Length: 369
Image 1: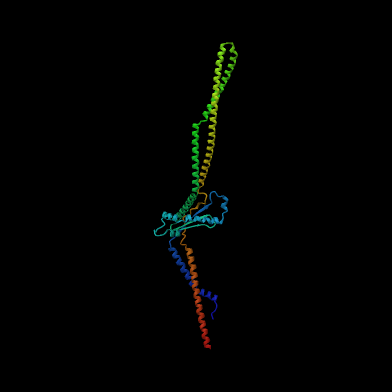
Image 2: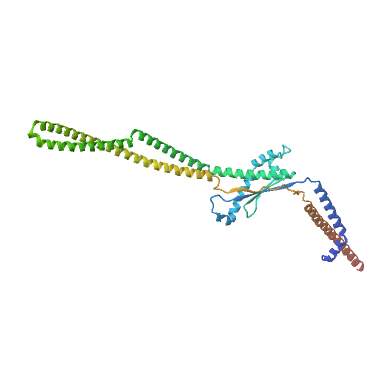
């Protein structure tokens, strides 16, 4: 009959063979140390970019962002992790020593891009054998990511800006046409000179009317003296002729004044209407021009903006191989492996002993029978 597992016997067995565990751990640690020292050193530089909210956003929103919004910012990883950008960087920094090496495999080995969880910070990590080149690559990729994001934002606002430019151009042409019409009207239908002519005619008619009154007074006087002699009759005829001439001149001036006043009123009406249209067109153009300037100034600010907050430093310590971690992992693996090996040996030995004990018991029973 088999016996149950004896923990004390198992511990005693392990303690008796502690040298196996120590030897395995020592060999694994030495092997890990040797391999780690032989592996080429790699340095990792990190550049940090912050994703700021759109320029027109309420400042209060920056302190109360949702988890969904922060998760949506992971799309900006695509700007830094694009194959085209990395291929450009690989050519710039001569990263491909072997022309047969693919960009995808090189990128997986060199570049790591991640938005830190629950933050608006994008980290770009570059791992190379040269620490200075690693820092330069990380900073270059960060700057190119910022530029690409800004260019994309500008492209998204380009349609709005182009529409504003078209509207402003149409309003400017309309304003120019009205101003040209205004100048032509000022030349073809002057107001000031016509008003001066009317004022001169009014003054002249007033003078003529004064002379007419004087002539009519003379006619009345000579009519009373006409019976006294031929001289008075001659003066009467002359005064009557002069009065008739002055009266005709006064009526002529009055007709001219009326005609010119009507013309002046028509011209002033045209000018007022054109001036009103000109004012409306000028205000419309100024409004559209102001909108266009605002659209051009704010182009690219309607989406999130990327800004470098840390270009990173030249790494002083290699990121790999991590000698302490490698040795610790090797020691742990050797410890587990040696314990598993000893446990297997203990179980095998226990089974052998139980089987031998069982055989002896059977033989003893047979002899006794």
